[in-house]
Amino acid sequence: MRTFHRVLAALVTLTALAACGTPAQDSAPVPTTAPAPTVAPMPTAAPMPTDALMPKLTSGLSGTIVIDGSSTVFPITEIVAMQFGSVVPEVQITIGVSGTGGGFEKFCAGETAISNASRPIKAEEMAECEERGIDFIELPVAYDGISVVVNPENNWAQCMTTDELRLLWEPAAEGTVLRWNQIRADWPDEPVTLYGPGRDSGTYDYFTDALVGAEGLSRRDFTGSEDDYVLVQNVADNRSALGFFGYAYYVEHVETIRAVQIDAGRGCVAPSEATIVSGAYQPLSRPLFIYVRADAFDRPEVAEFVAFYLVNAARLVQEARYVPLPLAAYELAQARVAERKLGSVFSGGSQVGLSIEELLVLEGK
Image (cartoon, rainbow, N blue to C red; front, side):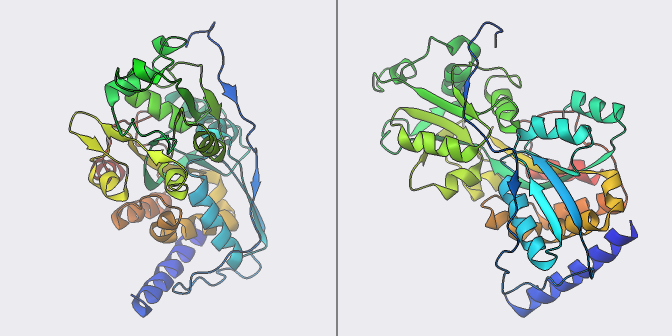
């Protein structure tokens, strides 16, 4: 852990100097799944921010870091990897997007050093890691608000209640709730075409838990994909579409899709940085994580990458169009690494309704 301590101290000092210089049922049909990439190779260089000092921290640092997991967390880790790679180009970083569940399968099998996750690790995934001798450190990196989106030509579904979303996505809706006017009588007699993350996705797990009442419990006659860009395009191309995915993908494509406001009993609330931070956007706000194998910290390239990630997270999370955590959260994450605090602070799986303040309390224990 000396490498991590040395690198973390250098990064904190340099960042501070830079800041001072410039202000279903088995018989049910399986959802149609669009092809998704298994690995996204990182570019060899990326533009460096002009107001940051991020020199090469170890001369001749090299090696390979294999990352997999959540497509929701992918944009954050991609930006971190690109900027880290512009400083230490000899370190090769690949990032897979097989979904949170698929990423944990590889992680617990020892195939990856880091796993992106859009929900906490499940109890059965923890057991699998333990059985295979994989210890890990859990690090929250951002906050997200799962965005329910429609085509811009949809001028009726401006706001939906959580009960209406449950009516649309619960298992009983399969083959039954097929048209918009079945949700509200004054909405058009037009088909509803549903798109969402695949069943290995942590976003799918969280969405179904928050709205239907259990992870993985939903109708199955929807088009699923682990590639959120595919989902965005599907909604943008179909007037009758409704889909859901991470906030960053909505913000990036705000000109071609429209977010539906959510009414959880306190009025209609749109996803935004302000409503996600305040906790007003419920029940679809949730923390995002990376999980790092404990033994990977013995490798200087991994230790330095994680240190770089945590010190620069607040800025780079915002660049990735997600919501940064308070600085105290990143300090707690740095302490967790320095102290080698293993395991998860959660009981397992999605934590619906968890506020940023509650996350800080858990991380501080």
